[in-house]
Length: 267
Image 1 (cartoon, rainbow, N blue to C red):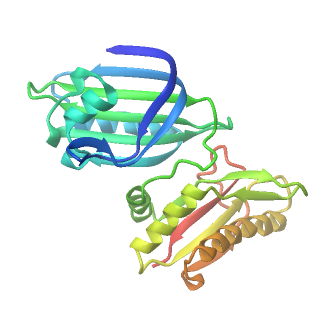
Image 2: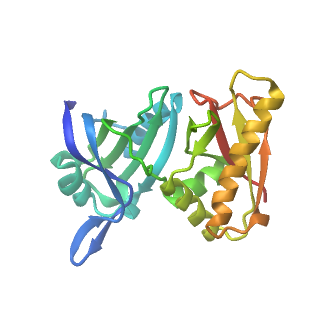
């Protein structure tokens, strides 16, 4: 295993595949970040596939409040050469295009700043399997937010039946709690609804503040209605979106959040 720890002034978080543009391979979506970077390059024991290794480390993220930003596998990721030599700049990661897996994830904690994890696994032509794990603790919050790809959101909704809308709960100048709807997250949800024109959704608000249940439900409904208003303002038909507020009656999935809004598929 090789590992490095240090400050990264310009870390490129890959949020898309490598695609050929004007004769060169480039990421079709990315985010530049800075912060404390921990990097681990692992050679897996014989008999373990790239998919096994990737899934093992992805399973470890299940212990946290994490959100998939992007995922690809096999040739959908582009060329392994691009990931090894251009992105990670680690020669051992150059392998077979059909045996590669990549994922980018945001981890949220009680701290105001999230951190980001990149996983890349690949099998080389000599059957050796390598895994790259990058963990970046950012030094400043991205004001617009880092959105998941529409494909990741669709996969989450289809698999789980719902998606937790990424938000930041804060108090306004009058002391009222509101959700701050970040542009990137809103636009991606709009893109999802455009792709899935037959989908109708429910926005379900949750609130865990130390007040009576009725007040929790009132506040949580307000969160859901804020998000609906933003969607409708940006062209989503109001009839496709219903709103509910259940206060603190559904604690499962709360994590470190004081409030949240879930996007639930109603079809």
